[in-house]
Image 1 (cartoon, rainbow, N blue to C red):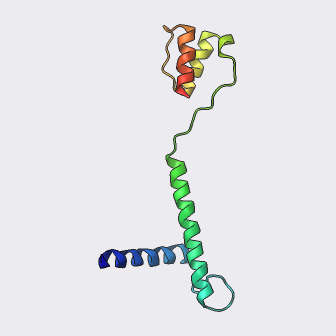
Image 2: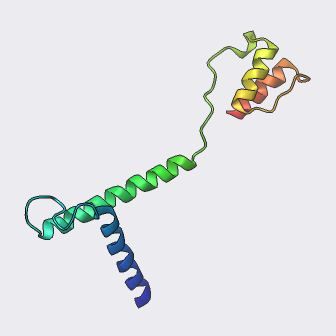
Length: 108
């Protein structure tokens, strides 16, 4: 248990140093090094970690295909097939128009 606590402390200190390494000891740039600098360093680290996590999560989310606002019934079969390909729907020319529309709607 002690080793886990020591590892977490080392990790926290490392993160604080990493995200504030370019600021020096006077993190809040008020001309003196005091407890306020430590608080600012922790706040900077928390914000940087949040931003990093948000970027990673956003990068992993697959882009959702926008649902077409067009009236599929009025589209020609070739246009529907092109749209199906664009949104990643499994459709082919041998399918009926209604089946292509269904595949497009299910792809979103």
